Length: 212
Image (cartoon, rainbow, N blue to C red; front, side, top):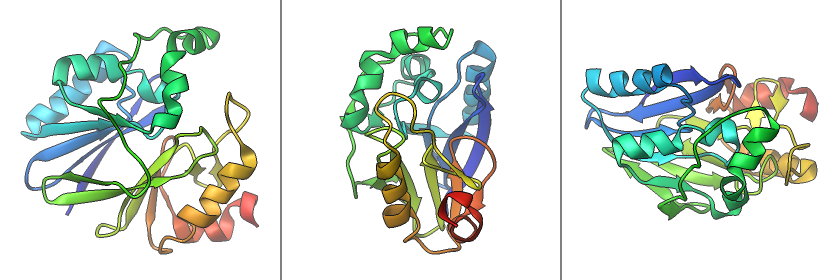
């Protein structure tokens, strides 16, 4: 059974997730740490729980989700996984960050590109990659059928959806992704978003104003 630790990092209050199980292997999803104190929180949690990080996975390429990639790869020496369709945001990371008055180190290119239906294994656990373009072209969700949760990045939030007014966003595509890829998951599936509190697929189908 996978266990989950949530941190809220950087000025955008981005959720960073560490998933691990009794094997002590772990993965970091959206390593959004952008200060020494935030990076220390990740290191301390890994060390205190004797965890061995295996991957750093990005749900998409926006700066608030990739701003910790440079430091985490440098210190942990683990592969970065992301969808290829968000290379634009890595290639233009410094320019895009400057537009928001934000300073980050140039994030490295992914060590491996992941695609729809890929299975990511760590320890005794596994996650399925679900492509959910719209917020960005390469947005993905990570789904655990066994543990009944999905990490959705910035596609789906508690009674809201991700922005599509940023570069390469597409509202119709996002709505289609949510309806056909996320809302087809079991209603009891817990949704862990890129910002804010968790919810469930069933509650979002009932109460999300974008779908009522």
